[in-house]
Image (cartoon, rainbow, N blue to C red; front, side):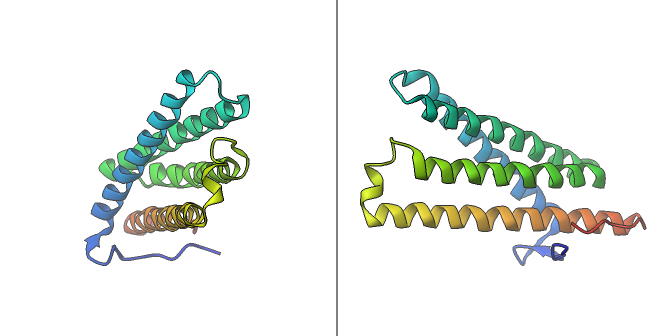
Length: 161
């Protein structure tokens, strides 16, 4: 099943501008995850080894996702649909892996266990996971829509993603 093709981003922006803004926001969020994950690694030597592995995995997939977002920015700037397609393919895998890291962190991290006793904290964690999922799905739909629009403008066949 192919992703839907949108004509505008957020209802008011063109696909190019909206995709550019979403790519910048995604890159900034990846940089924030890289900084947060890297900052927690060397300072806490008394942490469990699993927590350090989870932080390193978060840093690794956030770095790969940031690189993929930069490739999408290059594709938007140079109007190369191939860059968008490559970014779409890799970023969907990296986003899935990031969500798996978040779920594993929430379930198995001993650092989070004191916070999981309160129902409001659990509700906030679930809310942030849902917001991240919706944003990531919308980001992928917008990048795919711009990719298909570029392919159609060059009178080539666009592979539905």
